[in-house]
Image (tube, rainbow, N blue to C red; front, side, top):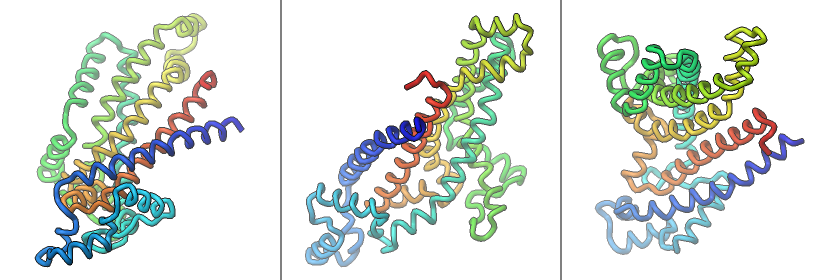
Length: 314
């Protein structure tokens, strides 16, 4: 019962944030130079045609009225129609979303599987050469841009060694297995920066916990170092770990825009770039809505996990 109450409170707090995010983006994107009606009309951009196009698209209405219309339709699952292609925006997003979700999930796994063990090992070897090597590597990892790392991975492992396919890859509809294999390099380019951040945060939390009285008591009782580190100290370091993982999800979604461009992937990140260049407001708003939902859903999960990991949190 308590779990559902916590989940309900977290969702209730997320809804106003979602509305505020879409509201701000809706108005900010209207500041982008250019007129969608002019782009659609092209060579036929006469005053009469422009007025007709604006009326058809609802662009002649006040901005707040346009937002209310969009939000009401989005609540029912109707994200509108693309200004440029005339296709359903829902269909466009659903076609691109799986690639971004799979890429983000793979990158998050890379971040956790590399960053968590590295942070724990560094904490056990604190102030040693091994610890300094890992922390220095983590510092460089945080500083390296995703796009540069992606290009280096392409040059070395794709163009040089030929172990992985080049930019563009294979469509999931054609060959799902090969398409997944083609996402390995993008996931590494996106996830290694997160692994460096997780390593640093986990190391700091573990060093603090390994120096506490309860750990010394466990050692005095004769518990194995493996049990103390992985069962007790790591459990008490789970709150900072959950926090940094939640933050990494939002960073991965943002970083996916750049990585998809570098590797030529057709995800919602590349869709957002195309829509921005074409002044396709509806598509931009839909991508922002999806990204906001993913980030807020992650925050809700992290918020719930706090209460599950530490019952003292109310």
